[in-house]
Structures are given as structure tokens and as C-alpha cells.
Image (cartoon, rainbow, N blue to C red; front, side):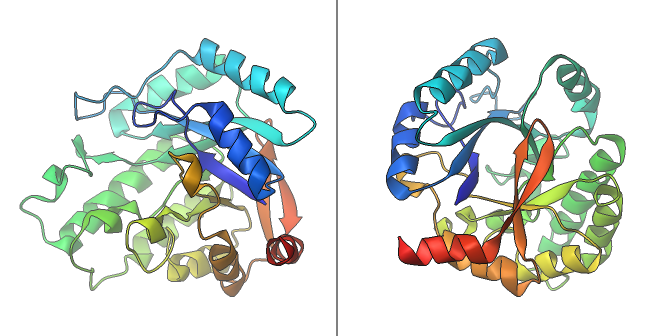
Length: 271
């Protein structure tokens, strides 16, 4: 199995040391993990500073790669929080840094964080979804220094009611941007932890991605605690297969590598 969305104590919202997570991954029989700690420049909630020393991060990754090299593969990733005014800053960072894997996510829209609920004030659920997806589309038209889009429909996690519109028209435009550029999406299994009916994105969006010609899909727990590593992976791999995919991807130096889901499922069932 491959868990490609994991946080450590380099992320402001996590206090779990890498070693604790790695030991848990080994005990679960994971073949490969990727740390994807948060860089969210100019995060709206000033109580949280999602920045850290990337030099120290790189040193730490190398240290654990060496320490555990005979037990598990560990990749160096990052998760960027997109906002329209930050794209040039992320471009500059990517000219200086090297990662195996880069997740681009939207945690703030219109300069307001999704978590506090401020973004949703005065909007219907449909209005909020539309603004979210349109801002994401605007960002990825200008910025493509990434591997996959993280938890594509994250906005639904913070709304108390379901939208009557699935916004597939805008999502299709997003896919028209990223698929020809060789970019993918993830299935983020944390949706189950937050009481949603599926991971993020939902099955209909996975199917739309496939219909648009998308092939690159990763799976990640978005774990901030070792106990939630590989959370609901068996169920989520079945969802990926139901959307028509036969492979999931891992990454090395920004290039995808593909792995048969059937093989992984057999390992899950026998473990």
C-alpha cells in the first residue's frame, strides 16, 4: 500500500514526529509513504503559521530515509495551500526546491479560511461551491508546478447541507487544464473521518476525471496522527476501481509510477 498524504510535526497543525508515523506504517505493512507537510503562505487565521524551514525538512527526510531504508520507502513531498496572490511565490519556491511529490490544495477562498466558516457567511451552499471551484480553476490556469490536486471537493466538508448542483461543468474545466499537463488528483480518505459518505473527491468526480481522460490518481489518508494512517484504504481502493481505474500512482522526483490496484487489494486482504 502507498499512503501519499501524511503530515508530521513540521506542519503547524500536527505534533506527530516522523519516526512515530513511520513505525506505524511499517507495522501496517505499507510499502511506501510520502510526507506532505503544509506550506500555506498568508493563511487567513493568524493563529496558525503554516511555514517551516525547508532545509531542515529536507535533512530530516534524508535522515529517516537512511534509518528505515531496509523497511519502507519514504518520499519527500509537500502540500501547498493555493491562493491567487501566492502563485508567483510558489513558483519561486519550486525553482529552489526539489520534491518527489507536490499536492496543491485550497484551504482558503476569497482570502478567508474554510475551517472557521467565515467564507460561507452570507452565501448559499451553491454560491459557496461556485466561488470555491472558480477560484481553484483560476489558480490552476496560472500554476502547474504540482503533481496532484488535493481533496478536490474539500468545500463540502464544511457545509451543513448538500448542494443541489454538482458543479461538474467547472470541475470538467479544471480537468481540461490539468490532464493535458500531466497532473492528477488524489482520493483523500479523511472524508470518512469527518462523517462524509466518501473520501474526497466523491465517486461522481472520480468518474468525471476518468471520463475526461485522467489516469493519475493517488491515495492518501491526510493523517496528522499515526493511528489514522491508511484509514479506510480498502474501501477507498474499491471506490477508485468503481470509477474505472486499474492503477494508483506513486511519485519519484516528480514522475508518476503506476501500481495495479488488484495487487494492492490482494495484499490488503491477506494482511
